[in-house]
Length: 155
Image (cartoon, rainbow, N blue to C red; front, side, top):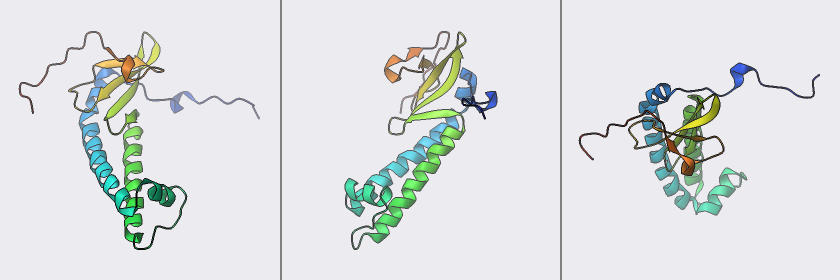
């Protein structure tokens, strides 16, 4: 049995072109909208169950809720499961959900044969930025040759 094992090539991350990443944006916008709704429900339910400490006790330590908070605890677990499922659905597309609240999504890509992330944030009309794998949002740079045409109307 070998001491080291290496993943097969088909087990690595999906590598996106800018066009492929942009094609997923409508799906991602819907998924992030669902996550925003769930996050709002989660915040309300955390308060209802007795606050953050009580929610952590129920969700992570499996402790019973305070008397009279049983229904809130059931709803809390349900919403937490829905959030986890929604995040898994986004990640299953091959992209990486970096920040639910900010709507920040990265896509593995190659730039000059080096792995990088294409970077998109909810509200942007298209994927038009990249950053090194070890860099984050602050290291974003515009993708050369990508021109974003802003909508003719503003919301």
